[in-house]
Image (cartoon, rainbow, N blue to C red; front, side, top):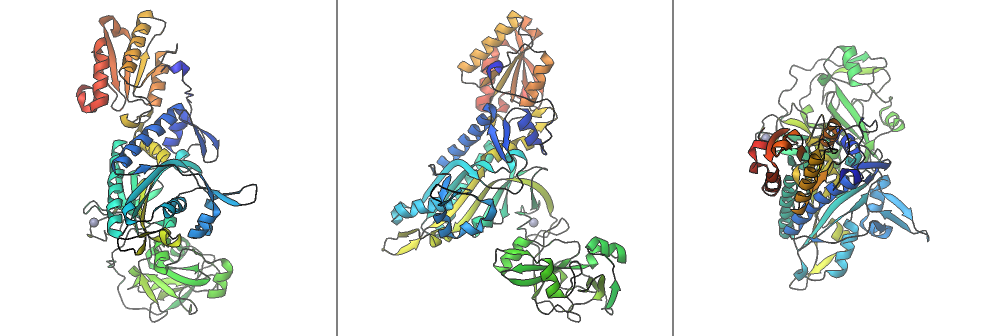
Length: 578
Ligand SMILES: [Zn+2]
């Protein structure tokens, strides 16, 4: 392939619209172009990367017993109404009407369509287990699309669905997919971690996310290096014993003026007390009911945990009017004292709280030295807060670390949520009817490519892992107007192509510095430079990752590169040892 003929528009300067490195580099290296917010075109090199990642996914899915199919992006509302998710998906779902005013959506996921497919054609236990998958475009009307392919409104996903007779079978299917995911991300050259996760809108009993660890990641993950416990912070458990507790005897309750001090920081600063001696009172509305939740001033409520305790999905902060009606005071001054009309829950670490500061349910006032049981009474103590770095691991008690991650895959044990609501059943050997037991499994294809760039880049540009690189070798003749140099370059290009190596020949009449800069930006893993040493029959090989170079004889170039590409970097240690 010749550079002059390839549609590969590179950009020298940092694009202003891009906030994270993978987005910047994808634009600069001519992989993608923006069409609308969260909507991108894949240019030839970008498309090649997507195809490479897809092919790795396909091979591992097939190896795990999956069968590929293709479902429609356009889906009728009736299926979503049947599962109960037409409402639940809310504004994230791209909805439209056809010319007969019938409701449709552009699929954000395919549980409904595939459950409908399976319920029509699966009758007997003999047809199970079954795992089906597709690689397809999905749509989600993100409130804030950003980070290029990381959080788009239109994106390419692999989604797989397993159907089993019972939980034992479903567990086997889940395990196969889990193992396949590990193989996929390893083959893509990613450092990843599988973590316990919240199931969210897909629902189900248990799920794990595959996280690529990177500082730009939108997810926070709690990891224990001692016992390997790893969980999304939305999910991470907190040990029931909170450790240190405020000590001392209860002091007498006092009311203090705190004019205009509505936040924990403001109250702590004004009263000259540490934030952890303040207790926040947060009011939530759940199915028309109000609930008050207490957490320490320096903590955050974990709404996913709270929703799980409540067994409710629709949880939101109470509005100003509700707060005033329930507490009798304005927003920012709520507290547990006198708050008798609503249930009062508290995070478990507050069990031994002593002499704390709370809102007085009146404008510009707080109580100091408030004590549970004497001044107010908590109905339930629960784990309702976000884990933090000073929490010990809930499994082994050793310290936790909080790291950032990019979710590239998610595997769910779904159970019978969809098969029951949509009546997908089979008959067992005795003729008894059972709902099929499902699992579902997603991988963001574009996001995986973007995550690879987050992990593999330097100041000059992308450093593609060989298996997903758009092309494998860049051939750079330093002077195309020099006949010997140009002929050698062409000959190397033709030889490599003939032995099945994907090669890009920079045939432009540009200064060497321009070409090298461009080559670094595009980031093909291997480079052949044809320069002065050609007089001695030699050319330079370079590994982009370690930027190490070595000279080889012209006739050695083909065999050496073929060896590296087929057997890996260890085939040529003098080039890759860093
Ligand atoms: Zn641990």
